[in-house]
Image 1 (cartoon, helix red, strand yellow):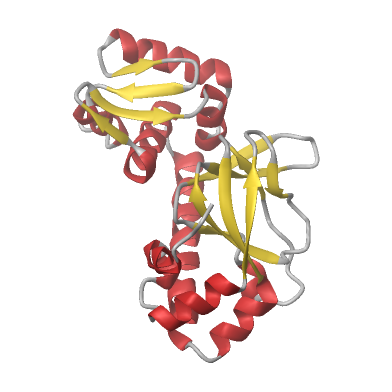
Image 2: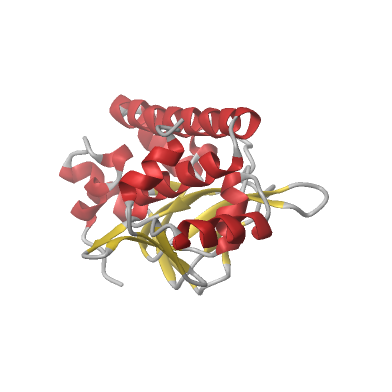
Length: 230
């Protein structure tokens, strides 16, 4: 796949980059093509590369010693992931990155990006903003898990995904993921997710398939997320 270096400006961290900087980063990047279900990297591996997804979708997930998985976030096109090694020497990946469909990413050595960032403070600042956003999102999700009802958590996850990756259609907003993914992201079980989606489908809020959810009534889902009817 031929990548125009200037397309890298779609990445939040590179939005203030000069054309010269984008060409420099592209020259140091290698292309990685991953089939659905395969991994860009595994939790605990040395964080030797950072990645920019240029096509497809991937998810970041953590696994505890008991083998339970938690889906942290979905990665969409022109998003950066796995960048910890560019900031901290000797870092390991805190999560695994798995392709949800055939995906292509540009990989840049962490040490190379660190060297580039040393003479380009804007890159360090924009990367710091990206990581701060991730931290705030994780804090919000932890608060939701600790204090909120499961229906509200599921509604909030759907709205968050709708903003990140929703495909607007005449019938609503379509999201592509499995019910297991939704269960992991909302901190509940597959059975609970299936039960709640079935009830919401009966109410006309969503249309749930095996690997997709169509939000037919976004306002109704917002009402659940914000407990507007209570």
